[in-house]
Picture (cartoon, rainbow, N blue to C red):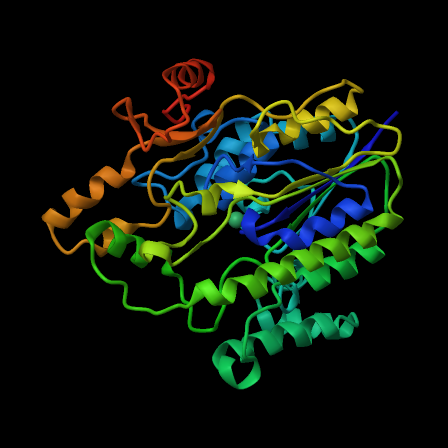
Length: 419
Ligand SMILES: [Zn+2]
């Protein structure tokens, strides 16, 4: 029996703001408890969810010289030499692989091997307009004219509207709530199904911005946090995030409802790549930190008709188990999810915080932020390993010496990026 796969990531959705996903249980989904993301930001976490490997093993993670802004090259090069994880395996087995993504970081530009990939934002499909402009040799007016001639006026108007809106944001829209998911739903409804398929979806409604004045706080707020300085913006994310997370979860339910028209032999996985820091203790954005707010994510799975849902064997489940889950269903193997030791890694801020350093003193103060740290969830709680020094930090009372030793022995923590 061949099964189809839908894998939906609700980008930046914290587990404690995901109660709206409870409706999925009424649609046949099984909820897994204590799901942990292997990284605190998009690219390493998605690569883990496709390869089943931790960031230190797959190598696509931040460090002092590698940031989100210059990540494309590393990511594309590494993913090209990888076995490409479960995506590559499904393609080899003749699966049609399609992505509908509202996060441009999860697209072929960053090395993700989706043969068909449509990138959306709040103004509609980005890919289609780019395709026309590219065909016109990078000439926007000529590309636009061709779109009009081909009857693609709607997409063109949406892009133009967006460009205007960027210049006069507050006149036209009070809150940047929409981030592309309604176009994903439209695309899903008209999508021509060719079995077997692997459909990847990334929904961005829980991701910032939460107001038009948000900017990109990650780099500067983290620099301020690390150097003990006050951050200049008052963002009020604590009160705003809930509305955005609620929209993300309700769109996820809408997408699951639209997917009901898909064949019944479809495995459907819903999770998040990481959570969000909302300003507590001056921590904003995602990346760098290993707080529960970033690492605890929702995980729901709907099994194909006739397949018995896998039980949860241990207290915590890593979302890097998703390829194992998909392959076990595909090969008809019985499996359980969860592990006694579940890890998440940080190698430093994924923004160039050093650029903010005023002098050598500040550079020295920021340097320890680039240590390789691993938060490990196990029986009785969690602890953090400083993999650069071997020190155990922030160990919760319920974690025994035996648990620590067992986790350090069993986890495949590489530490260095593979050559
Ligand atoms: Zn993300």
